[in-house]
Length: 291
Image (cartoon, rainbow, N blue to C red):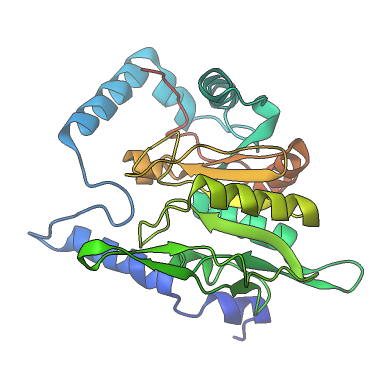
């Protein structure tokens, strides 16, 4: 039995696969202390709240409803509406449910987005994803259909007191050629915890708009939620920005719920990809409640 080129690429033992195998091994090892592995460690107060919500869903018949029905490929309507209302009310963003799509975890969302904007184009050109700051999240490395899909830039390193330091985008040497199809940055960065400043983010946004390419922000740990961030950071979104969030970092990694906020054209594309690849996002974890 011989695999295709696609099969050969995606059957390699990737770094992110090893990481997830390690997490699974920890779950199966008696006495191992699970510290979260990318999602927050288990917090008793949060676990009690999640248990309360699950019990309410069960009592109201909503849990059975979620398990026994498909959602649409964009995701559960009620959650899309609740998220749009929350972000509009709290941050003043001009968005509607048509600006939001759910995916089976944010890892799936990045696979979709990287291959929407990078790779081979109809005119024969080839574009890549630019990471303007390195190091970056290990899970990106193998998420491209084409080889050589990613390029990264070396940072400026600011030396701080007490042996500390901070990464900054080196705008002086940052090159955006015609072969760049998107800019992607995580805020904060996994695993370093580095948070690019508001000024840096605005500069990247301006560069992206000048080039008519999207700025993708991996907001899995950031603001407005889950807020696992310990420096000042202002949320950013506009129609040229694609903002990705996750319920995993709220402590619900098993729900596999990624959230993408983007222009309606991008959301339509993601919705279609959801339908083709997985029919619809899973329903668990997609009941939203403001508290």
